Length: 76
Image (cartoon, rainbow, N blue to C red):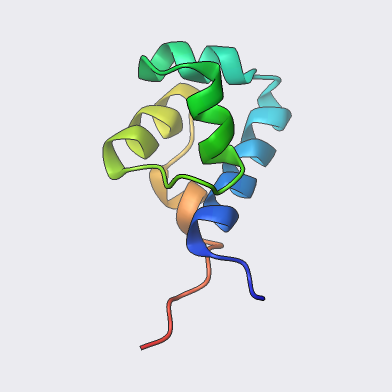
């Protein structure tokens, strides 16, 4: 089964977090969510919404497009 958009975005966010040594707890606090809620988003179980991605991108110091550019296009 190919990766879903949510899985790919979660993996990209995790990679950017690792590069910057940012924890799930820090991202959770920035978003006003629990660490469990962030964990589910990073695992691709729950999709980040656009507002959340904007906050994450700002927190990590990257463009929002960095977090979604590697995600596969959905089939039409």
